[in-house]
Image (cartoon, rainbow, N blue to C red; front, side, top):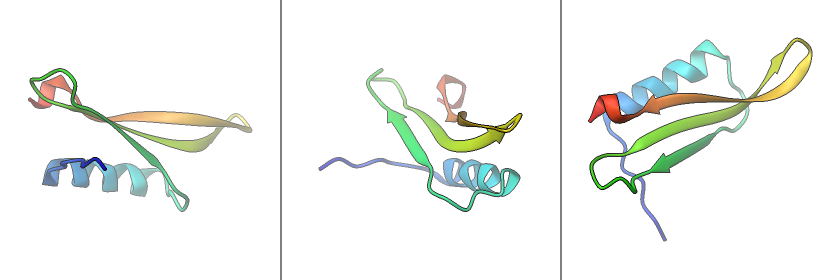
Amino acid sequence: MSKIYLNKRDIERILEVIKENELEDTFTLIHDSTSGIGYTLNMEFDAELHGRVITARVVIADSTDW
């Protein structure tokens, strides 16, 4: 079992991406805390670009947030 710790800012940014992209389906959160200093958090979801389905990745938190 593993835990992911999020803060209010992370949740607000995730909700912002959901609203901006009108997400109705699932998305993936990619959390990496191996640096020992802080963590990075990315959000992936499927989107359409020029009539093709792509996987979009949005940075939610990175080293600038430490």
